[in-house]
Every structure is written in C-alpha cells, then in structure tokens.
Amino acid sequence: WYRVCTIEQRTAIEISMDQGFGSKNKNTCAKRIAALYISLVVLIGRVVWVCFRGNEKPPSPKPVLKINANYPHPVSKDVAKAQLFTKAPLKQEEPPLKINANYTYDSTIAKLFTKAPLKQEESPLPPPKPFLELNTENPISKDVSRLWHNEEMGAMCISIPLDADCSHPLLIGRLSGPSLSILEWTNAPTSDDSTTFCGKYNGVIQGAVYYVEILTAYCEDFSVGALSANTSSTSPRHTDEWLSFNWTEVCMQNTLTNRLTQENCAILISTGSSTLSVELRNAINGTGMQSEYQVPGYWTRNEKQNLIPLYSRFQPLDCQGNNKRLPRCMKPMSSDRFDGYNFSWTSRMLQEWESKNIPNRLQANNTNLPKQCNCQPRNVDCLDGDCKVNCVHCVQQHTMPTSPLENGKKVCIVGASHSYHLMYSIDNLKMSHLFHWVEMWFPDELEVGFFEEQYGKVGCRIFVLGFGQWPASHRSNPPYSFERYLTEMTRIAQLVEDSSGPFQVYLRSMHHMPIGDRASSCPPLDWRSPAVANGYNYLLEQAVMAATKSTSSPKVHFLDTLFITHPMWDIAYDLYHLQRKVADLEALYIASVVVPD
Image 1 (cartoon, rainbow, N blue to C red):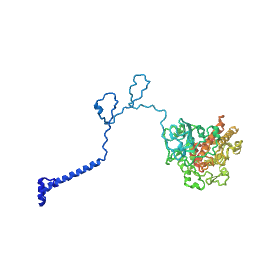
Image 2 (cartoon, rainbow, N blue to C red):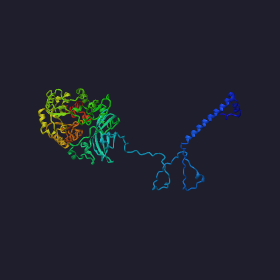
Image 3 (cartoon, one colour):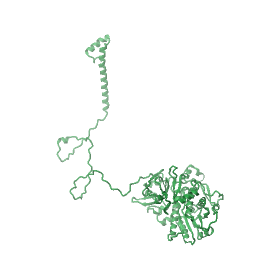
Image 4 (cartoon, rainbow, N blue to C red):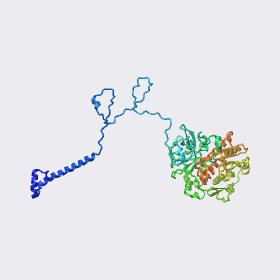
C-alpha cells in the first residue's frame, strides 16, 4: 500500500507516521489500495476461470467439403483451395424416376420428379380392422394369428395357421350387452395357409358396446364345425367319418383357462349394422311378427342394471360334495350374473300371455318340482351331493287334466326329466289340463304303435318329444354316437310320417348345459356338453328334413326353442335343468305352437 501512493503522499505518510494519519492523505491512499485489491480479485477469478475452461474441448471446426479431384472441367486455383462450409442443410433433389428403356421418343434423358404424392387408387379390400387382445393364459392363444371384429359381416373372426397345434378348435362365443347373442361359427381356408373362423352374431338389435367372450372348448372340433374343416385338420371332415367318429375319449380344455378373449374384451356395434334383420327392425317399430323366419323373441338387459360382461358359468374340477361351497367353486357357479336380463317377445300375443300367466319370472329359484311332491326317490340322479328326485307319479298327479276334454285335443309331452320340468312350467301357465306327460328316457324305447296307443289312452293327437340328455349321459354308457342318434331320430320321424293317424309330432331341440366337472374330466365321465348338444340338434333337424322332403303336408316338425335357451346355455340350476326364468318362457312358446286354436 505504500508504493501505490505518490511521492508527495508517501512523504506525507512518513511524516504522519509519527504524528498520525491526516484525514485527507489517508482517504486518498485508501481508495487506491481498495482499487488494487479489487483488481487482484478480478485477476485471480479470471485465472481460475481460464484454468477450468481449459478442460473443455474446443468446438470442432466446421467440416470441409472435399473437392472432386476427377472433376473434368477447369477450376480456378482459388476455388480448388477454398474451404466450402455448409452454412445450412442443402435442399436435396428428389430422386429421379426411372425411365422406360423401351420408350421410343427422345425424352429418355429427362429427369422426372414427383412434385406431389400421386393419388392412389382405392383398394378393393376394406381397411384392416384393429385386432383384439388375447388371453395369454389360454394355451391355444399361441396358435391364433389375430382376432378381430368384422362388422360388415356381423361376426367375430379368428385366423389360425394350418400347421398350428390346435388348428381347428371348437369355439363357443357369446356377446353380452343391451342384448345377448350366441356366435354361430363357420370357417374357410385362406390364401396364407390359415383358416378363418367367423362367429356371426344374430339378434343383436341395438347399436352399442358389447362384451365378447370366446371359449376354446376343445383343441379339435368334433361337432358341427368339423363338417367344414380344412383337409389338414385332424377333426373328422366327411359326413360318414364325422358320424362314426368316437368322441368319448376326447378331453376338454381346462375350464379355468379356456377363455380366448382378454378380460373385459368389448366391441362397438354401430346402429346401422347389417346384423339388424328386416324382421327385427319391423318388430322394433311395433309392426309385430312379419315373417315365419322372424325370431319370436330375444334377451335384453335391464337398462337400470350396470353393463358388465356375462362370463360363462361352469363347475371347476373337484367341486362336488363339501367342496362346492369353497370360494373357488362358488364364484364360477354363481347364477347372479343372469339377474339383469329379461326376455322380450316380438309377438304381442305372447307378451300378453306372459304378463298374465308367468308371475315373478325373473326370480331364478333352484327348484322346479311341484311343492306338493314329497315322494320317495324312484330314479335318483345325484349331483354335488344333492339328489334330484324324479317324482314320476307325483308330477303326473299334479299335471292331470282338471276337466274332461274332447278326445284328440290333448298334447303329450314325451321324455324324461326335462319333459316333466316342462310340465311344471305348463302348470304355472294354468294349461296343465291340455297336456299329459309320458315318461320315456331313450329314443329307442319308442316303438311302432306308440302314437296310436297314446291316442287311445289319453286322447293325444299332438306329441312333443324331447330326447338328448340321457343318450349323452353316463347312464347311456357308451353315449349315443352321432351316427346312432341320427339313426334313432330318423326312425322316429319316418315312423310318424308312415303312420295313418292324424298325428302332429314335434321333435324339441335339446337344451344346452354349463360345463360340469364330470364332462370336463379327462377322460370324460359324462358327455352332456355344448359340443354334443350342437351335434344332436343339427342331426335332429336333418332327420326331420329327410323324413318330410317328399311331402307337402308333414306330420313331423323340428321344434326349435334355441332362441330362448341357447343365449342362456349355462343357466341350468343343477348343471342340467333349466331355471324357471327360462323354462317358463320355453313352455309358453311351445304352447303357442302346438296347442290348437
């Protein structure tokens, strides 16, 4: 600090060192000393900054563009030595289009550029649909190439390669939403060595969101779908081979993992969908039944109920006896899932009859036998530790006519337990005086002269026959093959047509049933499954067609109630017999078809 002062200041400082600093000299010198310290601090800061900055990499120079040494034209020295830098990305020329070498005009040296995208011609094929997710827990999902909703066709479609492990599975599908619809499956080969399976939904009459459930019941289809299988499939393909195929040892897929669709899989069906038939549109508009092909009714969901998926009901393995109350058994067997669905008739007559004669039809009770029946077992069919009693004589007593009728106006219901359950529902309709139940378990029990005998005994001129449950059960061991069932039902149909009496006979469609643990065991212990029911119903219709093809006034008819029972195929309270919710509706429809006047 001494040297920064002037000579005069230093002199004054030296003088003042003995006498004390003068205020003037002191202040002037102090300012210079402060400036010196600030300069030193700034200098040190710059040194530190330079030292640290020295560790950073200097910015790389801009790339030099090389000059082509083989350029044929003369270039000035200045240009040759110049460093050419790209100041901005150069605009690249669009690639020239190739010129046809065979073109005959002198324009082959031209450069043709596409200045704008050319307008592409519209493809004749519809745009691809978004694929739906698969349930990867299903082992067959690895064989599926894609799953999609084909709304133009009104179907859910699946593509499976021909070389897949399960190239032709037996599929069960249902849509649930504002209404219910069973998927009716067909299949056809495609050019990419695959098979496309499409399940068409029918009766879906509202445009809305629908949940989709597709099950793979068997790895290889042996039911009706096998009739159109590809040649590479291991399923029986030709009619003779299909009829004689032994499916008694074919095992089901695991019921816990057989759902192919992902949980909460849903599709949107637009209001203008082609699935809305003219007849159903007319029914919606209040014009009633317009055609003999009109679906007489359909299942709808209560608008006040929340829309949830209707997953298939089934009985897991080892869920009989005391195990049936385990949570793992109770949840898949619960019937609560059906509570939100009602049935809507398209016939005003049936609507009126239902409202008058089917009270509390939405109550899904678990018994169908008359309360008055407290009889001892005659034939006991035990399921889940509970025995269902075939109270033959008791039911017969409570379904006898309450008033005499003119001979020939009675309807005989022929069959086993499903037929007497039908009689109980008819009793609820207050029409039991018109019907009579004839006990018969297997179709080969019906012999020549049966119809004439019942006409003489009871006065039955009209018959409703129901065979299928017992022929497919463990009581018929082995069960009726498709070939045997067709033979028996064709014999009965032809027997009716050859009779001389004034009879009208209706062969009722077989009821479906949920998958039980006896049917899903491996090997199966019972064969009452959706696959066998589909096969029997197909053959039943074929038998009627064969017997009536040469007559214009048939005596035998196929009575199809599947539009009522099939969408609720898994509702049977004991895995086999319809709940009242469905049975009463079927009884009402059958009565409307077969009762004279």
